[in-house]
Image: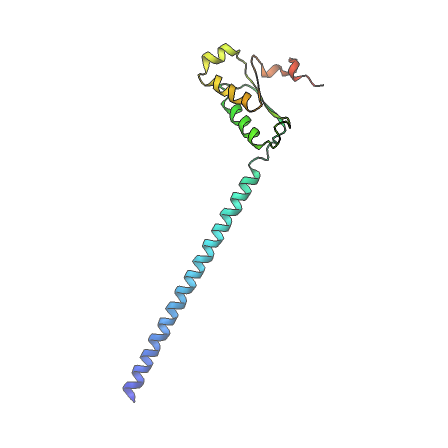
Length: 145
């Protein structure tokens, strides 16, 4: 009975040891799975938050004045974004972009200026040339009514 009992005890220890290892592995897998789920949830929350905050700086129906434009690339991108957000094309708003240069100087200075002006106008925006941003109060277009 001695050797059989010893084999049984040894076998029992091996089984318990194996069960502990399996439980430990299961616990580790469960923990990793929970951590992964938490990370995925955080990414989703961040994406939703990012989407929600993406356009909080302006409404698509507001008019935005861009002064001192060079090649009008910023104003063109903004105008296109606003136009894409606008549910009703008749709702008003849009980009009014100005530059200090006249039309011919703009063409000479910036090869892409003409294309960007067309992008602004296609997105229901407006472009004004020869506008000194330090003297807006003297321009008819900007007179407060």
